[in-house]
Image (cartoon, rainbow, N blue to C red):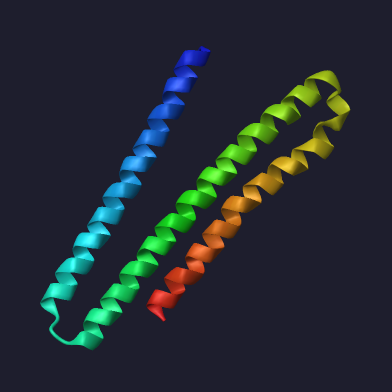
Amino acid sequence: MNFHTVQFIGKFVRYALFIAIMSAAGTLYAQGEAEAAAEATTEVATTVQNNSALYYAIAATMCFASMSAAYAVGKIGAAVMGAAAEKPEVLGKAIAYVGLGEGIALFGFLISFFLVMKIGG
């Protein structure tokens, strides 16, 4: 694979991820609107609106955490590979920094998981 193919695949994945997130958000919005219209009491309508806000918070948290982790791992991984090409003995020490970048995605997932448990509980 040449560089342009990899670049095209990367753009395609980003666009597909964006479309998936937007369609999920639209579905959740439509579902929240349908539930709000079906229920007449203000207490139930308030609960549906609160859950809709939590769904948006979950989606935004995972989106930004994943994109931030991907950016960090991309930048750090390139630097680590460049350093390892010059001095192979630093690879073991430098690869730990890639794990720190992955930690961003892990913390985003944990926050999203806690928000999901708030909805269920």
